[in-house]
Length: 562
Ligand code: F6P
Image 1 (cartoon, protein in one colour):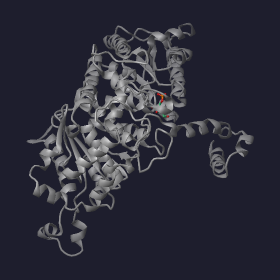
Image 2 (cartoon, helix red, strand yellow; image 1 turned 60 degrees about the vertical axis):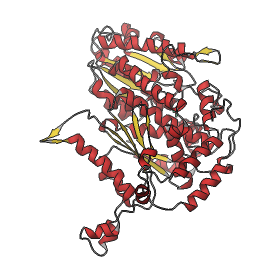
Image 3 (tube, rainbow, N blue to C red; image 1 turned 135 degrees about the vertical axis):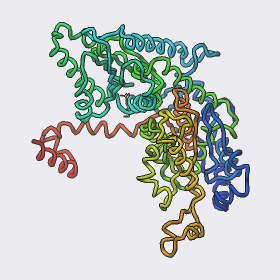
Image 4 (cartoon, rainbow, N blue to C red; image 1 turned 90 degrees about the vertical axis):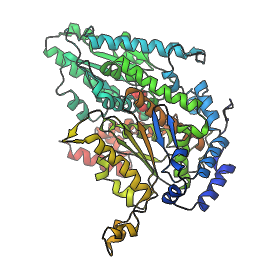
């Protein structure tokens, strides 16, 4: 399993012995979670594992010991761990862009031995010298040594980015916000809907605002447009406070920083290269929160918190790289997703954090998983041979319980769900004598229990229900869930959780034979938006060239716009 060569062409998973055995096993699988739990008192012990600080209970999934054995065989026959090893060695497994995939290098500790050298570059040195510069910048801003152009301390850092240059920083900031202790809050602008800029800046003071333009390519229409809008807002606001034309360059230098792999474009935009933090083409956008893309986090939460976050990622990387397959949580969870998607025909996957602080985690995961694995061709250009990329979605519990859980409990579709919770509350409030966090966790425990074991007709009737109401109040059970618990939501456990899902995503992509690290599917819409701009602005010739539906929509827009 730990051989060192990556397969050149993907193995077609559906032609493997393991796949055929899984099909057969699926057809013959009988019993229910109730029966499997009753007949095997060791079930939870066997199917729960530790990874770093996370305790992961897989026992409420629709699997037996044999299923798990066959899934691990499938991982072996499709070369998942060889591909993992090729990834961390820096091989160009992102074939369509001819790039290495090295987000794991972003969190290697300083001085890790042996040093990681790829394509002639000492990756560890590059990563740590950038981290040091970010920490220095963050400390200067946090201490007040760095001020705005009028000498005032920075109170708000505004990150302008979209996709991976936004979702990770927002999610982590929201999750760790209680740790923001320097009187600096973070805000995020992503949407090209001008409302986003207008609302985010409306109560901000330009004198105390630092803007970070975060864009891997520094060409993304939304980000560059928003950066220009905010630059105008900032310069106009400062001019109103007496900062004259002659100090405009100073103003940009003191209020704008940038994060990008394209530092030449940053300079063209007018941002001082001293305020620019780089990263590398081997970091995918959706895998970049732990790169310089996290600069807003280092400022608002502190470089020490950012370092703990990275250490958490690394803990999970080490687990993924070294744990035996039978204990390897990302491998097992990735393979369970294969089981759910390709054998049990699940189309979606819910992620339900029982933590208000993780309210943006499902949105973050949507980009991570769906931009990675929403593919129909394999890395050699041939068509995939089975379903790929399930739809990830979710909301924090308990809010979801009062919205969509009905369908998970009693609908006709199978929806595997990950439940995530933390033992320690971030806010230990009491309602009289009642510890409210305990009430919250009681809900977490109750939901996975109800989904697994359901309620039979006899149990419903025993409660005094009769007639047609009985089937309405029955729960079939056998609704698969995974429970993930950690002692507390900390920078480290958050890093572990994010890395866990990165590696789960990797495992699934490796089995399906797809390149989880490109995103060509976003290109056509971007191109067409540019092409359509003249027609939207009233160019008749451009309008004529459009299809009838697009024309009708633009005509409606132009007719309605006052
Ligand atoms: O359009 C998709 C995408 O390329 C994402 O993969 C990326 O995270 C996002 O756009 C933002 O890109 P950039 O950081 O280059 O502005």
